[in-house]
Structures are given as C-alpha cells and as structure tokens.
Length: 281
Ligand SMILES: [Zn+2]
Ligand SMILES: [Zn+2]
Ligand SMILES: [Zn+2]
Image (tube, rainbow, N blue to C red):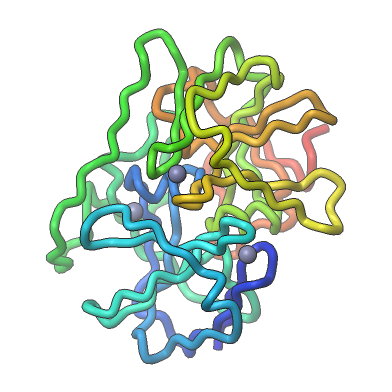
C-alpha cells in the first residue's frame, strides 16, 4: 500500500498497489499546475484509492470543460485526480511516501515541453498521449509573452508577472519539501533579485503557506487554480520563480541539481550537470 499527502499534511490518502501506469507529463497544463518541468503521475484503478483525511480541503480548478485540477486549498499541493469516467486515480508521484517501488514508463506530451528543459534519460517519448490512449487533444494554454519581455502566469491566468534582467541562478531542487510542494519529482526554479519582478495582475490572488518548522520554506500559489507562482523572500532579497509558470524563455538554463541527497528514488539524474547533496557550495 502507498500513502500520499500534501505539503501541509491536511490531505492524506492511500492506494492499494500495484500501479497500472506511471508517466512523466510535459504538457503546458501540467507544467503550470506543478510549476516545474513536468508532472509525474502514478495511475491506479479508482477502486484502489481511499481518502484518509482532508477530502474537504481539496478544491478543484476546471482547466477545460471536461477536466479539473484538484489541489489542497491550504498549501497548493496537487491532489489526486479521481477520474470517474475512466475509472482511474492519477496520483502526483511527488506526494507519495512510504515503501513503494515502481517504474516510470514514458515521457508524454514532449511536443510541448519547455525550451529550457533537456531530456537525457532513455525512457520512451511520445509527442502527446502514449499509443493506445484515445483521448481528445487538449491544446494550451499557450500564452506568448510580450516580445523582449520574460513573462509568466498561473494555469487560470489570474496571476501574471514579468521578470527583467539576468537571473542569479537556475537550479533543479530535489529536496523533499519541493517534491511535496510541487507534487513532482523535482522543482526547477529561476532565482532573481526581488527588485526584478513586477506583478502584471492578480497579486491579491496569491496565497502563501510556510512550513512551520522551516527557516524560509514558503510556497506561493494562485488561490483559484493552485498553481505555484513566484515567491518573494524579502529576508533574502530574492524572488524564486517556478520555471513551469514561465510563458517565455528566461534565457537561462538549469546549472545544477541541488539537494540530491533527498532525490526521489524513481527520478534518476541522467544529465551531466553538477550535483550538490544540499545547497551548492
Ligand atoms: Zn495541504
Ligand atoms: Zn499533462
Ligand atoms: Zn491561477
């Protein structure tokens, strides 16, 4: 049996194994809803899924007339998507804890992956759905930023922002808090001095959740769609931009993997970027 929970702990659930399928999805909706390069889902028959607590803390954003994106209203973590018609529960792998081992099978929707992401592993890759899945094509959201400007937005589009100038760094964080917060295997972030962000809309729609025992770790997310949005850390003078929220190429590319000491066992690192057990030295 596999246990899952959100970052704040309000939402907990369990799934009887084994999972039917496990995929990494690079579609633009997943990138925005998870705020990183791709989402990873472990898919189980609906009958094998049970809430332990917090079902009432899950709210949902209707991303299309036929699909919804559930998340914890307190911390923004993505919640399992219970698809009644298909009879499946798609569980965000970054939120699964406990003793489980199963294999990732494929990258899907690589046709819409971010320009700043380079795939280096040997899993099969599909432009959209894998063969045998007859589902309707779901376009967008494709928001092209203003030419010459680096802009970003949440999935619903309420929160939009612009960043200017050169980022301080871009890194891929594997810490356990990022895995839970982004409900994904890692969090790819672009860090700028905090003077370099300007909100274009929706600054009043942003909610924050600070992990109680953390020095700094705080997530910011759109209250309507749950998407991670840039988080300004006044104490440190920086803004941490979830790379998945970007609508334009920031110019930078990931420079390092950090906190690899807590890497998800199901997400091996296959590129040649420098790796640091915790913060870079
Ligand atoms: Zn939560
Ligand atoms: Zn997707
Ligand atoms: Zn939103």
